[in-house]
Length: 102
Image 1 (cartoon, helix red, strand yellow):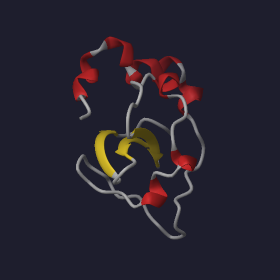
Image 2 (cartoon, rainbow, N blue to C red):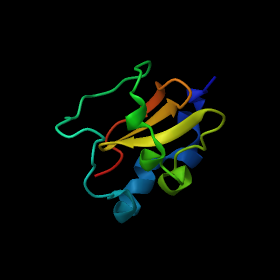
Image 3 (cartoon, rainbow, N blue to C red):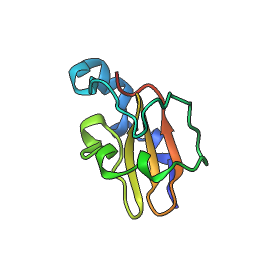
Image 4 (cartoon, one colour):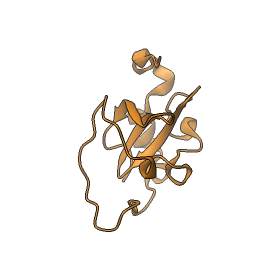
């Protein structure tokens, strides 16, 4: 089970890190897997369709954004400007950070 206690660990201060490394967080336009799909705010417990957490959307180096490493079945994925931690076995969102990217 994922431990959200990482948020109190200063090593993972993505918000503070972003203010000094703005270009790192500017990833450009997000292309959803389905044409015409629009942003909908996703919360913990939501189940994503597999197209949204395929390897094309994985955040390959979470540390570059000061996110904790994902382990086991979990992967950080980009969803528009948000970072979602998804259980890739079933698509359940287990952690969310809103407005990480631009």
